[in-house]
Length: 302
Image (cartoon, rainbow, N blue to C red; front, top):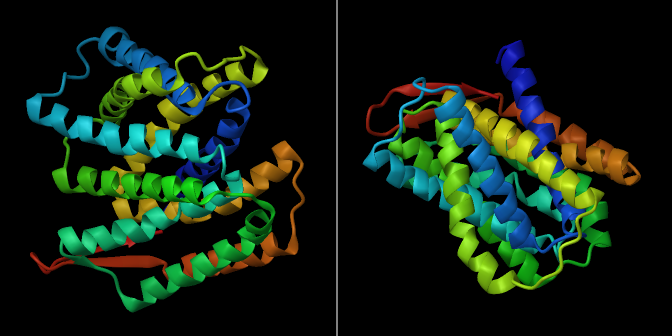
């Protein structure tokens, strides 16, 4: 992995981890589905204007087959993942939210094994197990200090499963579109899908137009929905497994951001957990993924 890949991976991790904290602030001013719908509709419109008006002629409109795939990506990666995640954050701490995200890596590997005929060696699995042990150690203070409900945990689990399935769909369909076009239509479809449940479930709910509400929209739209999702698809297209493995650092990054932004104390659990995670990533260094159909080995570096 080169210097550029390292910097892009770390940037993605930090921005991704900031999402749960931003959501916590936003939920103090508006209900969850309203926040998600506004975020995706506004971000989608801005992206459409950019690629089809400001960059007129540079990007083609997707064809019928591509639109179908983009609809499913919008449903899985945007509507379900962020929608269910925001609802879960009403009763689940940001620490637990960030703890669940790395499960996407293992879920994707399992789905790739089941549906793409791919396998991962024992050394790589061992590295991931060690990393997960580190994640639990680092997140221990958040776990014992939270008051998560069973419903919130189940919603969060469904959100992570949806994200893993979305990664599989993107990889399996081999969508030949620029990352920004994929991200644009995924966000647009994600926002449109959320309109009906938002109207049915949250009509009449109070919205406070304060600094937290405006700050959440600005950060989630420009830093997360536009920039970081485009970065995610870039990393995913380069190497899906390596991209998913950056999510392993999400709880650590989230813990550090919470300490800076929310004044939470960094404990010895966080230090020990970080060491476990880094050692696990080092041990799993290269994910050798072999296709049972072609017999050709592909190397993915973390």
